[in-house]
Length: 385
Image 1 (cartoon, rainbow, N blue to C red):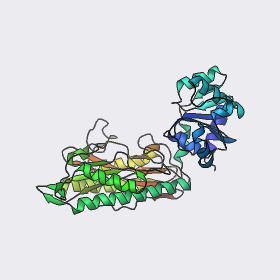
Image 2: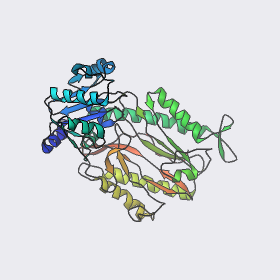
Image 3: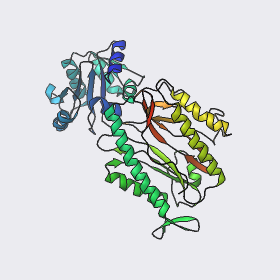
């Protein structure tokens, strides 16, 4: 099945000629449809017959070489300047659509309202959609996309190894980890991670290196000295600067001797991870995979948002999410998550959180296959280092 068959069916069902995006490539739907990366906004038209883009002249040669478009146009091709007024832009878009006999388009929900009204004023039927159809289409990865994610995962694991080695080799003075005579801080570890991944061609974004009590907040970025005998949670989701695909992985370490409470929480979290992975197969819903995690935690006596929607400790987030051009994308692996399909790339990241003891989380990245799943994560799961 062609990756765009679902989009073709959507357009046919809606009775419209095409799907139109007007955004920079930082919008992942734009990047996906056009196969092109440009910082300034440009226009992509998808129809069942072709993909066409209209872009500034300075991007034109590269777009012709690198984009997936069947046709590349410039505003000047229609007598308009790319640096003209908003009305000039709308006139150029109408001429662009007219060339391909397009009179009606579906646009993303966040399509600029002024542009949509301007196109309507010029006789184009514009219908905003709220299904996220392109996001749904790109949730199912091609083999090439899976290879990009796999490569990103290998780079992530190499960086994680660098961080683990740094923590493992540190001295301990008065309970604080020391490196080269200075306290080893979360900030210092993050700088090491950022340099390592930058050298590999990846943008790390905002990593998490959260020690101790900070690890009890799932999205706390982390700061300050790292200490022996307490959990250090590291969550990395770098993006390949070339392909733009992400990976995602979390590990929790204790340099020294973890408390019995942390050890027990880690072991049950590892059990929850295994239960979720074993539940993955085509046709199983993300909600059912999430329930497998909740079952493990609740059987062990921990609160989840399923058992107590108001709990602030225990398992207090969804089990996972899709990964691709965005760090967080479809499908959802949580309450309400729909059926998993072959080619979905998803994280599985159970965790337990309590400020009184800290937090633990383990996150692997898997791809749904015809007979179950492939775990793209090769990094060992070990608490004590």
